[in-house]
Amino acid sequence: GNSVTQMEGPVTLSEEAFLTINCTYTATGYPSLFWYVQYPGEGLQLLLKATKADDKGSNKGFEATYRKETTSFHLEKGSVQVSDSAVYFCALNLLTGANNLFFGTGTRLTVIP
Amino acid sequence: GAGVSQTPSNKVTEKGKYVELRCDPISGHTALYWYRQSLGQGPEFLIYFQGTGAADDSGLPNDRFFAVRPEGSVSTLKIQRTERGDSAVYLCASSLLGGGGSGEQFFGPGTRLTVL
Image 1 (tube, chains in turn yellow, green):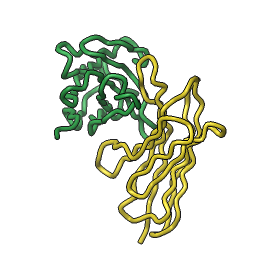
Image 2 (cartoon, rainbow over the protein chains, first blue to last red):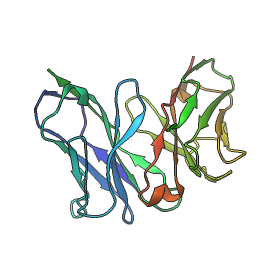
Image 3 (cartoon, rainbow over the protein chains, first blue to last red):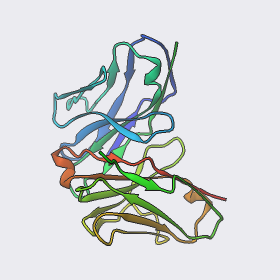
Image 4 (cartoon, helix red, strand yellow):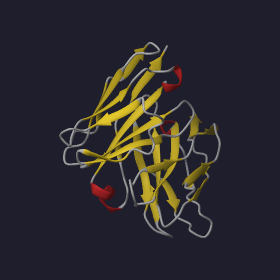
């Protein structure tokens, strides 16, 4: 079946530390891949996306590269800030049928000053 | 511009009661989705509308759950005979047809349902 597996949290980092949140997927076909972020008290927001193999999505200093050979889409940021504290969700869309998103369980990141 | 809105933001009800949750999608988005997010989990797909019709309701957990979108815009998720296990955050999302080619969806803030 189609699924997304995310690195379990919570993750606690000091400000300016390097961040990696691992995400791997299982899918039939060629999905689009997404990272959504949920800040405290807010709804899900798209952080970045990639629609085909070797594409790199980037936004707000975050990056993720669509790796078909390892079925991965790991999220990285070189220097995290306190304002990056949130829950991060990896997701895929098969772009067929209902076009619904399949989400991972989420990874809570806390950045301390 | 206006995003996806959902009302109410919080709903507390008693076991066995009926509830309705409303979603107002982004103007011009023909696709509308409902998801359910339980504590500590990612959102799980419930139902997909393309226009007025429910094109895929395979994620609805049982026949107590039903959703409508009579005019192709606002949607209402209806839960009959609520159970404590229905407690979750119910998310609505909308998108252009096919997610604009990428599958991207735009989410509302959610309705937190608590069944006592």
